[in-house]
Structures are given as structure tokens and as C-alpha cells.
Length: 383
Image: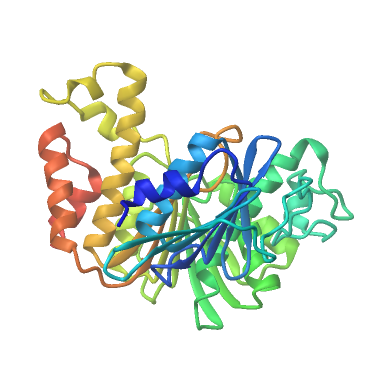
């Protein structure tokens, strides 16, 4: 019996032109199947959900690491092909690695990719008049993408795709949604369009922000678009009160600890789903210090990036402590925006709450930090 790494070394060499990963270990995981196709020395990666496909590109070394990661935690089958052979990896329920190869080329072997697939099926289909995107300068009046705004269009669609991947699992026709720190609300309007026009749901959606002038403009825009179920309020995330059940909480670039207050409210309201894109995380960066791991705090840029990642990792663990299945997702490429991590949480009991909390408390002790969300949950006795 070979180890997983040995089997991957044999099954994914540099002359492999196609590789498919299938049979998800977690049937509720994000992808049903992943394909890698070699084209011009780069692997074109296609990640399939039940309704969409997401794309990215990887070099050989990156692709191999990615395959090992997927087989370690997400998929149980791998098939790959070179010019003469097919390789196969199967992982049993007990974790046993089964490796085989065929010495003769099979008739069922897939064809090599010859050209880039330049067409992409977007949820917000080009050619559709979406008034908020026209006003944003992303689309023309006839729904065509303005060339200089193509990256922004891709970013918005990717965000909607991540939301859609969870919303399609909701067996409700009416939803109550809160958008904390909505700002100018570009994505709030697009989300409302998606929920009502594409998903055909009855939506009551509230955008909250501290700036009265911004809220006034957003309210006027909602009236202009005829978005009757969308309204805006001036208010502070930390003090906001909601008497009815909230199905979805959204926080898009809520600054620093505002994200923590939004997550805290979502937790205490027992919100079903949370989509949070954190922004400018200064709190931990201003507190963090460590004697044993000073390497991570000595250099400014390392300290800043590590503090940001540690903040989000702690938030994810705390959400799991409070009964959520949680993921951190990269939703746009680095060259579009540095604010590219989304926390996606779904209400679902977690079996390792004590272990997740112990990890948080170990980090709090090691780095001498007091994250706001941790303090709020401790004070309220949620953890």
C-alpha cells in the first residue's frame, strides 16, 4: 500500500494532460468535482458546484500541492492521463490509499484541451439591463460590459456565485436580510436584484450605515429602482436591535471591529447564514506580541498580514464554537483587490466546539491579544 503522497507522485507527473478529482468525502462541501487540463504549460482548473463552475490557473508545482490538499480533505477519487496511461487513486472510508495504472491507452481517455474556453456563464448574464450596474458604470444601458470595468464585473459575479452556492440550499420563499455597514451599497443593490429577479424570492432587506447622507442617497436609489423590499437606516452595528428572525447577515468591508459586532449580532440572533468580507483589521496588529514566535511580529509587513489572517481564523473558530459550519473563501484574485477573503458561515451544529475554543484561547495567550468578538462572546456567555 502506498502513501497518498507516493500515489500522487506517480499519478501526477509533468506529462499528465488531464486530471479529475471526484467522489466528495463531504457531500455538503463546496465542489462536486474538480478538473485540471494542461494548456500551454499551465493547468486550467475548473471547480464544479451543482450549478456553477469556477476557474483558475496553476503551474505544475502549485497544481500538485492543490491536488494533495483536495485528496487529503475533500475528494476520494482521482483519475489522470498521459499520452499512454491512465492512473487512478481511490481512498477508502478507512483512509486506505488504492493506486492503479493501466499500461494501455483506453478508448475512454479524454481528449487534450486545445484552446482556452473564453466563454463564462455568469449569474448576472451580459446583455441584461441591471440598473444599479448601469449607474455604477459597469454596464452600458443595453447590458454590455464596459471594457475597463470587466474585472469589477467578474468580482461582483464571483461574490454572487458564493452567495448563490448557499442560498440555493434554502427551502424558503421569504427571507429577512441585514446588511451591516452597507456604505454606498453597490453590492447591496446587486444582491437585492439577484434575490428578487433571479431567485424570485420575497425579500425584506435592510442596509445599515452610520452616515446619514449616504443612507439618504441609498434610499433615493432604492425608490428609483422600484426595490420596495429594500430600505436603509442610519445606525450603529453594535447597538442595532432586531425583533424578528434574521435569515442572512451580510457585512461587506465593515471596518476593523465593526465586523466583530456584526458577527456577534448574527450569532445572538441565531442567524441562519452569514457572509462577511472583513476590512482594515487594526485591532490585533496593535496588540500582538510574542516571545516564542517573535519571528511573526518583528517585521512590519509580516506582522500586518499575519495579524489579519489570525483575526479571521479566530473569527471562524468562534463561529464554529457557536454552532456554525464556517469557511474562509478567496472570492477574487489578488490583482483585483487585496480585500479578497470572505467568511461564509452556515448554522449547523459542530462536534469540536471545545477543541475550536481551545485553539482560540491558545492563540490569545501566546500572542497576548484580546479580540473583540472573543470578548463579546465571553461576556455574553455564548462561549
